Amino acid sequence: AQKITQTQPGMFVQEKEAVTLDCTYDTSDQSYGLFWYKQPSSGEMIFLIYQGSYDEQNATEGRYSLNFQKARKSANLVISASQLGDSAMYFCAMQHTGSEKLVFGKGTKLTVNP
Amino acid sequence: NAGVMQNPRHLVRRRGQEARLRCSPMKGHSHVYWYRQLPEEGLKFMVYLQKENIIDESGMPKERFSAEFPKEGPSILRIQQVVRGDSAAYFCASSPGTGLDYGYTFGSGTRLTVV
Image (cartoon, rainbow over all chains, first blue to last red; front, side, top):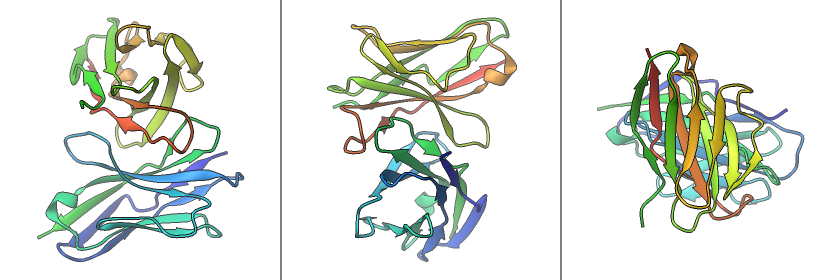
C-alpha cells in the first residue's frame, strides 16, 4: 500500500535560516512521482516542487530543493533563507505511474519566527 | 488565464440538507479530481472524472456522495443529507492529461460546515 509519513507535526525556524521538512514514503513500485505542496492559512494548495523516481538530480525550484534518497525512500523538502511568508502547512504527496491519485501525508506546520 | 475555480468558497448546511460544490477546471483541462481534507489531515482522493465520465470513484463514500462532469458546465460534487462528519474542505484539481507528465492545478477549495 502507498503511504506517506511526515513525522514532524510542527517545525520552527528563524527568519533567513534553512529548514528541512521530512517525508518518507512506502511503495513497492519503481515508477512514481513525489510532490510538495504549501497550504497557507488562507487554505489554497500551492504546488512547490516535483521529483520523479528516475530523476538522477535532486529537484530545485528557487529557494526550494528536494533531498531525494531513493534507497531510504525519503524526499525531504529544504527551504533556504526562510521568510515570514513561508509560515504554512506543508504536505508531501506521491503519485504512481498509471495512477491518477495523489496520496498525501498529514502535513507539517512550519512557523518562521522573526 | 483563470485557474481552477471553485464555488462557493464557504458553505454552511444544516444536517439533512444537500450540499452542491462546483468546480470549473482550467481552460484546456479535461480531467477533474476531487479531494477531501478533514481537519488536521492531508487531502484524500475521492473521485476522478473526465467529461461525462466517472473514471475512478474508489475514494467516494458509498452513500450520499455523487459527482458529475457534464459536457457543458462545471463539475459538481453533491452530498445529500449531510451529516456533521461531512464538515471538511473539498478541493478540486484539474489537469490537461493523465500521468506524471501533467501536473495538477488545485482550486482554492470549498469549506463545508454542517451545523
